[in-house]
Length: 341
Image 1 (cartoon, rainbow, N blue to C red):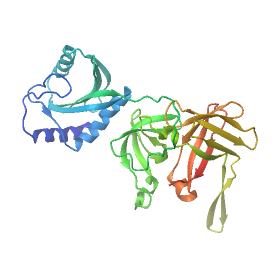
Image 2 (image 1 turned 180 degrees about the horizontal axis):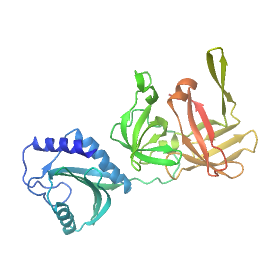
Image 3 (image 1 turned 135 degrees about the horizontal axis):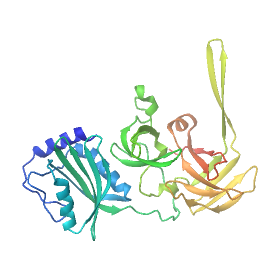
Image 4 (image 1 turned 180 degrees about the vertical axis):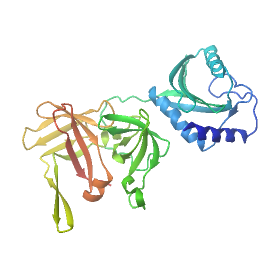
C-alpha cells in the first residue's frame, strides 16, 4: 500500500516551497535539511488511517499529527531515535515489516507526552507519520440511561478504523469501501448493499461486513443503549425446497418465539420464558465491546449482540440481534424486534 502513497506524498511536498530543516510541531526540534512537511493532500487519508491504527493498538488515539518526507540516507533512522532520546523520550519499536520496503511502527514515551508513528522507507524515500497520543476513554461499565441508535449506515467512511463482530469475537480493521445504500443502484454489487468492505489489521484480509456489526473503537452510549427495548427470543427458521416439473420453489417458515427479553434503560431486565421461571435482574455492559450481559433462569450468562442486516430489515421489517451463551454447549438464540427506522 505504501509505494503509490509515497509517490503522491513526495510530489505533494515538492509542489510547495522548499524548507531547510523545518521545525516539528510535535517536539522541540527541527528536521534535517531537505525534509518537507506534507499537508492537505488526499494521499494523507490512507496514511493517516494506518497511523490511527497504530495509536489504537496501544489503546490511544491521535491528538495532533505530522507527516514528513525526505530522501532516504544511511543512519537516518538511528539519528531520529537518538534525537528523541536526547529530548528524554523512551523509544520502542512496536512492529516492523520488510515485505514491500521497510515499515516500522514505534512509540516514544516522554514525561508528559507519548508519541506513536510510522517510519516508512521505500525506493529511496522516507516518510515519517507520527502523532501525539491521547488515551481512549474507558468503558466505565455504567449503564446507559437513555436509548441510543446504532451508527446509521454511511457513518463510517473509507479510511476509518473500526471494530466489527465475527464468530471469534471483535476484530479491528480499516474501511476500504462503502457499499450501496438501500434504494441506490447496486448492479453487480448487490451483495454489498448496506455493508462495509473492511481490511482486517491482524491478518490483512478483506471482507464485506453487515452495517449492524460495525462499531466505533471508542465506547459510546449506543454500545448498551441500542439494546434497550423489547426483544423476542428463540425464533426458529425452517427452509423447504420443492420441485414441480422444471420449477424449484424455496419457502421459509418461522417458529414463533418462545421467550421475551425486556431491557430497561435503568440497567434492569426481565426475561420471560414459556419453559422456565421469569428472571429479573440487572444487565451489565459487555466487557469486550458493544453488547449487554444477562443471566437466564439457571444462572447461565448470555451476551446480546447487534446483528441487524439489510435482508432482515427489507424483507421482515425487523431489527435483529443474537444472544451468545458463555457455555459453548448451548446454542445461540436469535432476537428480533420491529424496525424503528
